[in-house]
Length: 350
Image 1: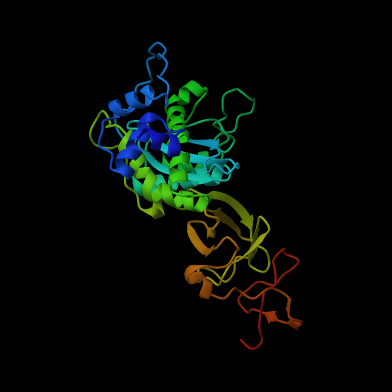
Image 2: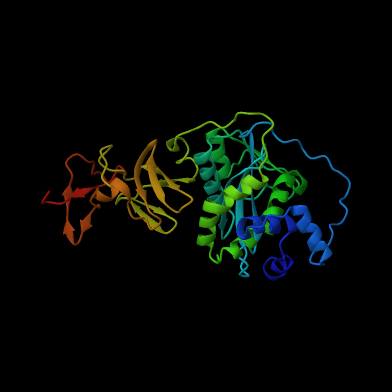
């Protein structure tokens, strides 16, 4: 056992080492015996005396009453390139509902964590976060946040009826900080043992293996039985947890979005959407959608290609000349330039 610790697990905490021995090596001796034997062999040092007891903030009594979301930048894959680990945790039980690596924390990672949590558990009451710029607008550094100017995250939470609470000190996020210390101590070692070196492999391992093991080891029972979560179908929150911005439709029934051109396909709702104001949604996975009021006109992949049933619907013809051929006005569409309206044409052969 001592030789195995020195050869393979030298940077593991004794408790973590004992768990791996039992799971991977068929070990049957107790944790206390293992700790004392390692100390006697000089492989580990005795823990220093703990400081005076501090009273922690009481947990919420019911699961789903308040969730924490935070990110930790660390060399999780031990490759020399730090990544952000985004965690969404229940205050009542310390159970992790969402955990994944991303190149950089931001609006997209926030929406991903919230989407995974709500899909798994349902809508909850409060979200407790730091004051990062994707969470809140803070006019003066170190001052209170301006809740009259919501970010995309703030707007989405308000639409879902979830209260957003800002933390004003590291101590206020103590539960999250302790959770990340545990993750920084354990997760890189677990990924190393599994031979994982890429972010995609790590996220798959976290979702399929690590998350359940972590919760089994560290989650506690909530003070009260039951739940404050409210189950909700995806249609109730999917199109809320995304970036939303208004755009004006161009004369060729297209919308421009961050260098992409989104072609609106033919729709039974109206003849065209030229100069109409529509709303573009960008989801955390890069996919897009265009809405006119409550109706979704089309969905697109991250490269602006139509997806789903919209891919088989041809777009409206462009205005004016197409491929050098003049097109005559459609009989049911206005054609008065002076009034600020437009001319839209259809092919003579139609």
